[in-house]
Image 1 (spheres, rainbow, N blue to C red):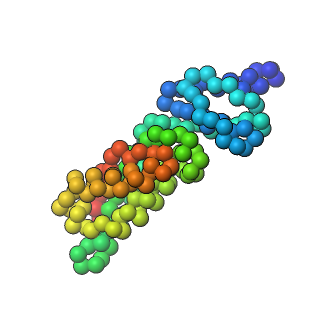
Image 2: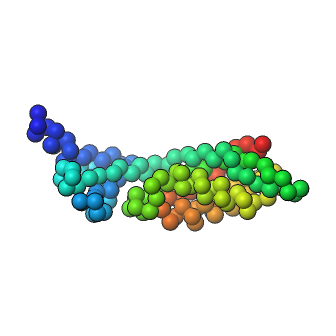
Image 3: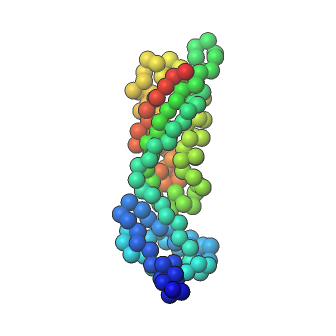
Length: 150
């Protein structure tokens, strides 16, 4: 029984869509996977799984300014994926939360008329802006969709 528990903490089967960040005594060592990855049992080594698949981040309240100066909320859905697992695990605690905050901040520089009359161009501009920011923590923004204007 004890041997089975030790083996379970040492042998990791990593699927194609994941990578493992391996830490030795708290220091980053490497990104491993996919396939069979061997790691010493904790506390000698610890592992963090990183999902490389595309995921959606909902941003319910991006505040934009109308022509009369009033603020309007716009809901946005952002699709992202991790392209640099090392940066994703070392440079941000949660890439989705960081992306949500970046979208809220970027919305402050946009005008309401852009969301209404230049929707496709605004989505692409916002995607490019967020992609530059997300690259810092190893993510790529693949799509931005304006969901609701309210």
